[in-house]
Amino acid sequence: MDITEILKQLQNGSLSLTQAESAIKSGVAPDLGYAKPDLLRREAAGAGEVIYCEGKTKEQVLGIMQSLLEQTKSGVLATRAVRETYDYVAQSVPFAQYNETARIITAIPDGAEQNELSGSAVVLTAGTSDIPVAEEAAATLEFLGAAVTRVFDAGVAGIHRLLRHTDALRSCDVLIVAAGMEGALPSVAGGLTAKPVIAVPTSVGYGASFGGITALLAMLNSCASGVTVVNIDNGFGAAYAAFRILRGR
Image 1: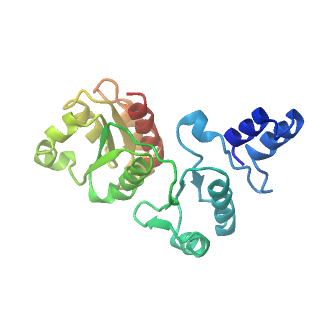
Image 2 (image 1 turned 135 degrees about the vertical axis):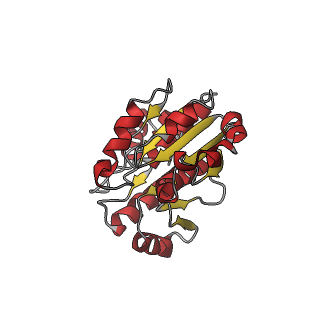
């Protein structure tokens, strides 16, 4: 029973105040022992709780997903999921789908409440090796209701590849840029468009890239004013930041 139904039953007298209080306490965060799924996340943040799969067993992922599906009216997103976890989940949740590049499971039942954002996003990568992080961002944004255009392998080593997409960069409402190596692409993109730019440093690169730290520091020190930077390889975080921008339009 969701909180709206509990309040309706309290209003019509089907539940006493004590019963409603107990139902709310047990319903908003059911205790699975290993997790307490947040059933009010959608009301608080605009989108439901997302399952981060790394460090969780496939049984735990399925248990959390089933709890969210049973007690909310929206779909569920699970990030950093391996194929084995998806195969296990799909046995019990047949409508679940898997994006192997993004390592994302989506489970959207018929009739689920879904966001419909009016704005659009471009997800841009410096190189092909940055695509898994960028695809995590793109797939997350699509789940959250945004229209997404992907522009891959358009880094500064061949700047003409980026310039042919200038119209797309200027016509979108928010831009996510994933880059490793020296992390220069967000600065260039930030100089080509006035739209919000969210930079994602990736761990792509040779030894002195230090697993993405070089790109991270370059993006934090960008000469393009107003570039926002998320953590290394955090495509999901970039997507959620873009979602908040689009939702607030």
